[in-house]
Length: 144
Image (cartoon, rainbow, N blue to C red; front, side):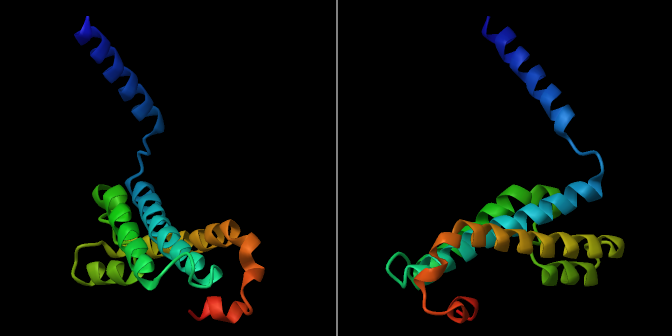
């Protein structure tokens, strides 16, 4: 009885996987780079926004370091097997220069990473939008 239930579960997972799977390899890699950059910057910039907007009461410099470290860890874990988890245009350019990334993929990777950064910035901004008047100057947030 247990084997038939497990087999039914596997076939269900395969059906869902086949419906959701993206066949285009380049598109899959672009989405992975977008997601990896988004994850990294949401964790890191969220920690910076929390520290700045709370005027150092809800965060420290160490918590920002931990947030960026956790963000890199999660981004690499999520995207590493799909695209190599470059997460940074400089890494993609270096991988292309060393011959590990084809030149035709480089603009796609860079676009995905930059777009992921912009979307993550919009996400963090919208999360902390209500606290924007808690500081004396937006200049402090932008230049921290």
